[in-house]
Image (tube, rainbow, N blue to C red; front, side, top):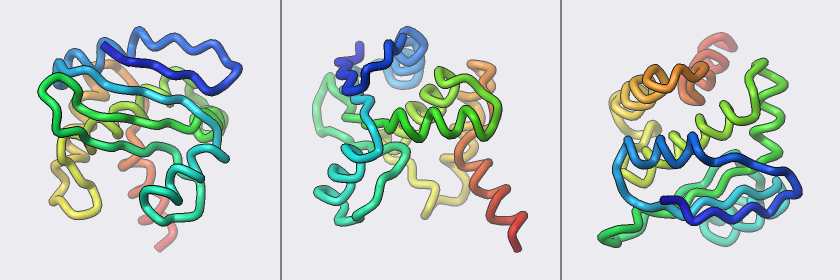
Length: 143
């Protein structure tokens, strides 16, 4: 189950996200969808990074609650325009990315484990390329 807080004026269907959470780890999540200004403040408060970001995740040490995931709707909307996907697909990609971080995956320090797991989940739900793949493509393309 997802304890969902929508801080936007947009109607958001989280049924796919609930299925993803159940399939990946079977634990409950807190999910907050917000805007760039709010996520910037949260990012600054908890990570001392004074800028907005697409997704934040906070794992919990709890038997039934896996963690909290905060997604910027503004980023999801921009990504959907940039990559030609739906906003629901972008929210799902950000949610998957956040879940994997709550499970201890870290694409910045692992040997591709998070990328592989993310790709596996994305294929299962027939979603577009992952955030990690996009970032690697942009990074490698600029070299």
